[in-house]
Image 1: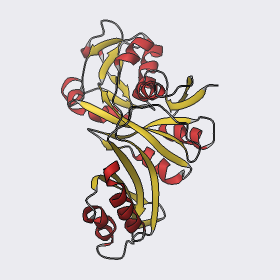
Image 2 (image 1 turned 30 degrees about the vertical axis):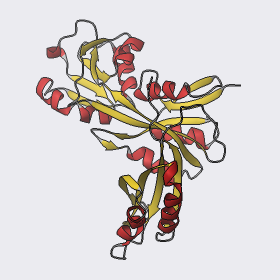
Image 3 (image 1 turned 180 degrees about the vertical axis):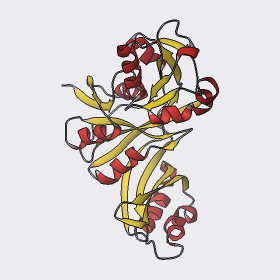
Image 4 (image 1 turned 180 degrees about the horizontal axis):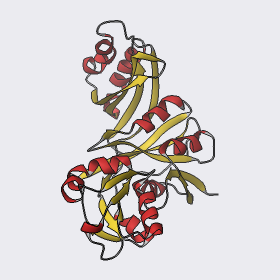
Length: 288
């Protein structure tokens, strides 16, 4: 029996690379299902069209991926079961022997374009920048169009997949990486094999009372009081209340911390308006 793993397609995206890494964790054969967006990936898992999905959650240069966060807020049936950090190298792709002087249009995913703004402004200041659903889709469009004035920003794998040349390597502002998460349906997780990690990440989603002074401080104070390391806190507006916010919080804990962690989590849950545990999983499994 094959497992189905959804990811943002087409072939050649960084999501596909992350998916193939996650796929090595499972004993069963894994089939990969490309989707049109990160939200479509999450929806495929929630509807049961895929056993699991791979989506980016944050990027070293551009920060959080809000589409993923909003999907996790709305799709309560999903749970995070693993994560990894994938080095990201953005390249300028085009037709063989294409000259920079001839380029008048650049395609890529919005985040990739933003990551490469400094290079683009210095080297292609007059080129129109056009957003696509993914970096690989940009490469696909340029390959199909065969316009000597068009290029794409995408991975070296995308260049190989779609028969393009790498005109310039590493055009992002600086070295970059993206954290990807593996999501499955709650209570239907497929177990995987991984070398036991010393620490685990606990991902939480909280909402505090927006009109009470110090409500956020009171909510997270138990982590400090019990010696639990809170490594991330990120904010998303509540779509139903402009003055209310949801908070994504990650803490790291080892087996020796479990009693203190459980006490802290119990206290946190009692101090907030809403509380959800998004997942407990190994803290970034190492890539081969």
